[in-house]
Length: 553
Image (tube, rainbow, N blue to C red):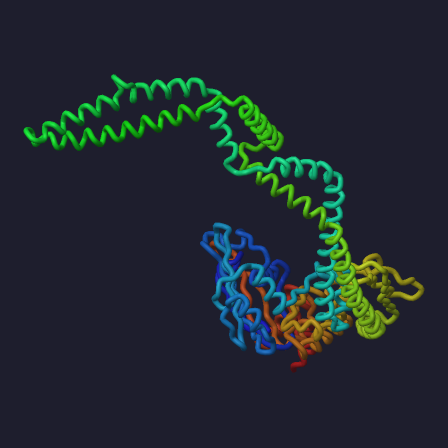
């Protein structure tokens, strides 16, 4: 249940802190006093969208904080999964909206996302507004009502998971079929490309080696001529560098005896002589090896032409990239070769998942059909008590062979409030007051099934008055025996039945108008209900009537 609500700098509210009690409580106030402001503030800690206009003009931020008694509800896993400190007895939801437009959310002082706040808030409070009455026309909402009364929460959760897995497998099957169809069209071309690359026997580094060898063959005559020229300079019999170094070395050796410093010359000349002698032999070998080979030239040009053609065809700049293309083609052809097997396996998976989902859908149908007669009977009795003695109601269920989000079933609430008027969909026949009474009865029926600690009715009494309003109040009092119920109402018959009574009012100050909420004493309740009965001028008759409604002397 909601234990307390703290609001600061929100809309017309400076600062407000109010405690709430268990059972049935009412909130009243003149039109425009600010009841919607209280609900708007409450909606923020229930995860609704924040609006910068919510921040009181001139303030940097607004704060809304709600404290809840959760002792009867196990929220441990919810908190632990999100790293939130868990208290078995209480939970505090807080929302801060900054004037910059940003907002922050907290659960037990732990920062959380707004979606976490919304998920937890939906488990703590159900705010029923006039707008929610329109949900009664929604077949999805009708299905939710039936499932709640049938206790199908766990079964429906299993079905939705199975249905989602079935649809996912079905989607993958369609994707595979499309891939196979497209691949079959390209298969011949893919295999042609693959075989061409395979036959090319590509080797990394081959192109660079061939290009180097081609350059050598194309310049073989020039290379051979220059190599021989170098050799002659080095090894010519009379004037070659090698011969000159040999003679110089001999001369240096002959000086050692008389000129000791020539030892270093001997060492350096000997090193140069040996080096040039080796170089001469190496150059001669190179010159002899270089030969112009037209057959090899033609072979290299043919191979390079093949490589260049493949690169151009596949928009590659090297053999490395061609090898990558080859791997991609290999993978695609491999998938095509395996596609028939994959298709068969996936078809079996789809059938298996469909059978599982269908089985759960059949269980849902059976559970719904079982509860519908009691639903119709109980709802007719409750609505008849609220001033519609001739009401007829039918929950029409039709089952198809197609699976949907809620199984195989489609629901339609058929309604008639008068004799000789055929049953028609609620949306097309029920008046505002009739829908209000229907919704109140439905909420009372599913109160236990939905396990909501608190329900807030925002003017659910729209379109009713007098004795019917009195009976609606009794229904809400009965509600309050099972859970915390708060009703925002304009009707004194309902307001008088609250265990506690809160009043929303405005105060006009010199520089601003402010909204406040206060808990009324019995004397204040008497005045408020008398005002609701007679208007701005409270009469003695209204006071006496208020005393009768409140049961005081």
